[in-house]
Length: 182
Image (cartoon, rainbow, N blue to C red; front, side, top):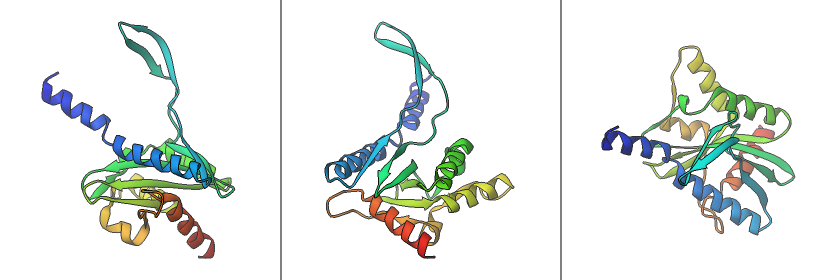
């Protein structure tokens, strides 16, 4: 593997780490203020052993989604993605993740995609029904991505909160109000 290939592979694997850290900091802030308890869900890994400081193992099963918890007496579950450019490629989310979000939503959970457009410095909540609509259309030969310019019409921008730098729960609350009032 050349240095260029290694660098490209490494950057690809860690592209959403800063976004994830921001979400985890928001979750700590929410917990400290008594607003919500939301945790990062680990991917099930089977450790086979270690050799010279390297841990050997494999993923036991597919992960469901990134975050889950409780907010205002309701379950909240979401997948978080960070992209560069002006669209979110639907190949970046798995069918089993969409199905999981739908299952928890069917049981009353708040379920969505939290999507960062890094180049624009903006974060949006994409409601599950919008995500599923794009996913279904792509499966039937339609567009294979969600364009940035559709965020204004179909998603909710996450603003910086007074006490939480990435106040996605306030945005989720607004999304749910529209859902139940609409």
